[in-house]
Length: 469
DNA sequence: GGAACTCGCCAC
DNA sequence: AAACGTGGCGAGTTCC
Image 1 (cartoon, rainbow, N blue to C red):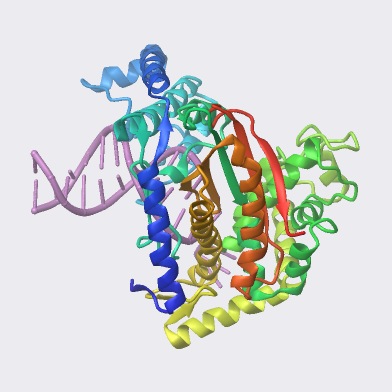
Image 2: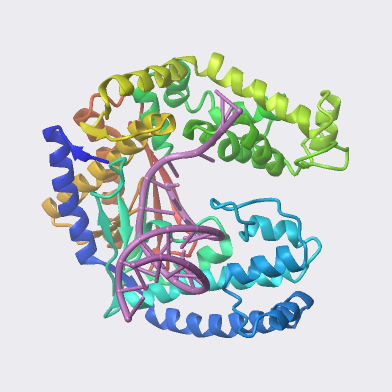
């Protein structure tokens, strides 16, 4: 793969980006080492207890019986015990066609082998301890962690992060999030602050393909919402509220349908995921007892039966029809753009991004349509990061940028500067950026997330949505 | 004894 | 007919 920013503006962005990111690395972020050391010990105890408990179970005893040196961390041993000895049904295979030992496979097997729940808990805590708590302790010098950020690795011209990877700190799992994020603290008397772009990939995508329907969604968020519209279509709902089961279904539409579709997924996988979000079975008949309870009082299972969809296969067909409508009607210009994009790449052998970068090398259809969106979406954050760093210095502010997570920047903020920073960020991200890059033809929106004074990254922040005036 | 690989899992 | 994009890293395992 040949990677080069070819336009001068792209080179400039890389140069200035590296300087700004290096400054954040040198600045570093404070770590509560006392907490990390304490939680590391607690985890040691919890993890070894879980290991002992597991090896006392029926499956654990069999494992110990078969292996002289049983290793709870060995997937090869687990595979042998679970699939060869206990004859668990293989529902999923790995890349190299071996029976899978991942959490999804284990969850399915746990119906017959309950001790696998202890095993899963062991795995989860081991992951947190090994990758995060011990990783942080290993890389922290004098109480400060200095994760670095690369601009020369991802083929999309995004960034990556290492020592530690600051871009995959737990967020979705509330328990893991709290456990790990309690380690991150601001400088004495300061507060952590984050600013992230809302829906940046959707926005940048709209600027690339200029699909009128998508542009409308981006320009009038108060009027229509893409994920709500899709939830209504997918789950065939006329009445909709943004709470309760309907809220979950909207999340399902967003994460189980819309985003995977944009990445190049298809209705078959979507249907599995969408059924899961709606608490419906992924095979066989639907019954009135299954599914989340809707605002109308009936279950999603009953609701689909009423609509003539009484089993999973009909549901899959329904999602297939939704997919056709999605690309043939709703986003037909986007669809056309994808086709032309692929043709264009095969003709030229490379693709150009809105930000002046060129991707060469052997790309597949999904790559061709994703890279031009992923890259420039990150570049919006990078340009914002550079400008914010410059303005902080120019204005003699004491707050400092300390990191970045693709569409989000993190600041160790002086409390007296928080309001100034909000104003500054709103101007840079929502106004200045659009003046710099005329290809941005939709409004930009950022969320400022402010944590308390001396509060950890695990505490409840105050969130403000910032838009152009 | 280290390099390279596989698998799994965390993020966007 | 086939079918999800970008990363880092730990642990086990295999190769040399």
